Length: 269
Length: 342
Image (cartoon, rainbow over all chains, first blue to last red):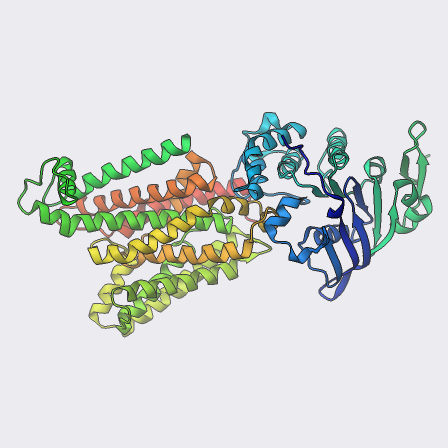
């Protein structure tokens, strides 16, 4: 049986070069160059309006570059057909809404649609069951998606994306609706996906989560790439204080050494 | 399994209903004799022939074309309703409600009044198709924003389109002669009284093509319920699919109204009832809605021509009397679920 993740060949990296995106004449992204590699979890962080979701949308193929190039596996992204892309990358949007009363099982099964008519369609049942198990949604399969709580909807949507079994995972704020336990669970899943040879790009607001789970962090501000590197290199007190316009301290965790990001707060009393 | 048994059950119910409907009328023919008559025609010498005087001709000249047309119209309405709801991602979309039927009626009325018959018996159907396509395209362009269709916008657009269509029909009646006025008035009531084999040969192929395409794309229509972007991420060419389905809806809508006029609410209520049983998956919803629509129209037509002795009620009026209250109920249900109109 095929492993749960299609191992991405080394050539399957995604390169963004001098990307510029204008919307209504205003630049949203300016001169962004970044590479998404197999086996790596890349976190996109930055203040509100920094262009994180726009960059993810461009990587996904939703937004055409105004200038610059995006190539995926050495082929321009614009020359991939929708179904080819759907078999190579899965995208979790910030919010998933479902128009009709589809059940969780049916929504997750939709993730298998790109594989219809291919030999991989034989794996549908296995892939769906595994996605439900990984996200802890097994007991809720018969429930109507729209009637779930926000956190359950977020996990069901993630299960749909995992069931797609693509090499590349694009996650836009997957932890926003989740409690502490499920935040850790989702990022553990994402990291496992990268460890199995896939690639993951995740937009995160929580710098602590990014520091703990990302192999690489790209810090965006005002539509520009400010820093790109290992968490310890990117997350420095001075840089974050400047980017977020708020004084920030970065301390090593006493046991693991992982950077802890702490905003400076006024002391009471 | 459930899928196969539901479709089989509805098919059997429809066939039995057709036998009864074809045998009922001023010249009664028992179902066994109806079946016998059909079998004799296809060369099988099984079962009794109609024993009543003129039984055979009553069946083949009057009743069969009417029942077959009812099946075609009902299947087209049920299928078009389910398809349109899926494509708009909105449970209140329906050819009659959003004005596709009245748009088709304007197209057909223009043909009737101007008397052009460039493609023979197909001219009225062609006019209805163009009118329906135009109305669908208009609603599609006006009611959508950000990849979704708001309930309020859709219903309001439907009101606007229906109002304009009503005005145009009024204008055409004003300029038409007495025969045209009668023909147009008949349009707005909806009736199968004009059914004949010619009507069946015109509408049948339109409906068959439309319904076959619909069933072929059912799985992709499911994906549209995730929103346009997510559907695209799953490999669907969303705009192409939508435009194709808008054309198919217009084709089905035109097939449904071309010879029978506007039969409202079937396309709205039938898919809703079916969805409660089958769930929202279109692979089951679409064929089941077609069968359900056919059952409703055949039964409705049977009621329309037998409820009152020697009188025929207009079918469209009958379906509206039953369908209207159902529409209110659906509006309330949707409103409660969506938590207000926003």
